[in-house]
Image (cartoon, rainbow, N blue to C red; front, top):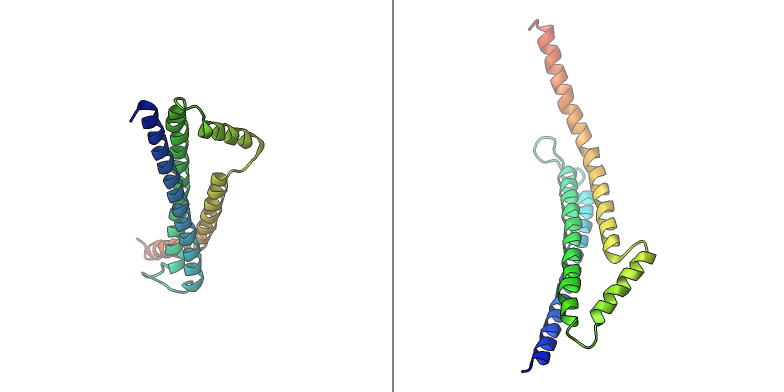
Length: 167
């Protein structure tokens, strides 16, 4: 096998790996979307279920929802970084040794497109993750406020009892 053929085979192999990586990214996003939808349904159907004393299923699921959305956001960022590294640092360097540079041209086209457009797919993914996180956070605050107020009232009542006893 000569050097040019070796470079071409390496290029093909790496491009296939990059595509598999992008497919995993889409699968991961499907997982997060499914998890968010399942948690929303869990919030709807377990609204009156109370766990330990005053902790509701709604509170537990909303905290879990905020956590999943944060992980989703970080995951989108990490995949985007890794995909960019695969494009710019690896594939484009291999393409320098080839007669044509399809990924380099594609990446330049994407950069030009980004300058003219506000949202890319990853931006939309982040927006959905942030929107879902805000929803779950609002539900969490709605659930935790009465819990905190109840605890606060108990503390105030205990202090008032001690004061009335002369302690």
